[in-house]
Image (cartoon, rainbow, N blue to C red; front, side, top):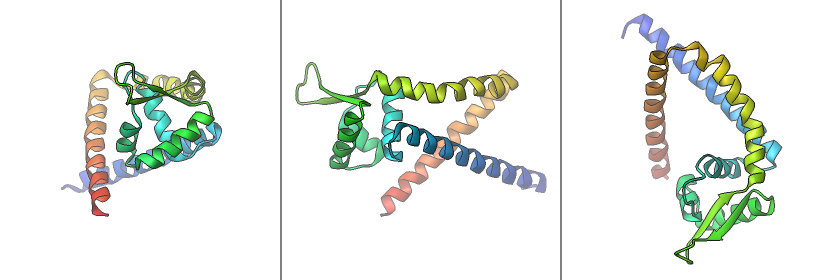
Length: 157
């Protein structure tokens, strides 16, 4: 690897670390404002960003790598806060579905809306379609590697 490529790789690595720290900081502040913990926030993120998906407690447990018992406790907390509702599936009454309430969707979008608007105006608008394609490819591949290594760590225990 050339020294220029090595320097660029290190520079990109630092930028990714700084971006991840900024995302962590934003998530921490969002959790503080919503009065939830980090795991609760991740659950809410799934429910708010994927409202069309039929989400069960088992789905949440699998996605967050939690036991069903801990998901039940978390959902009790979030339901008491007015953030989620549990309903019976229309055709399979044994199945419980979990969904985000309008309250948490409104609060979440009030928090994230300004970030999305500024991101579009100050970041996305400064790149060509071709550059955005490259950024997207990079992020998709980096996410795949991150998930694979997260699974590796989860299996190591």
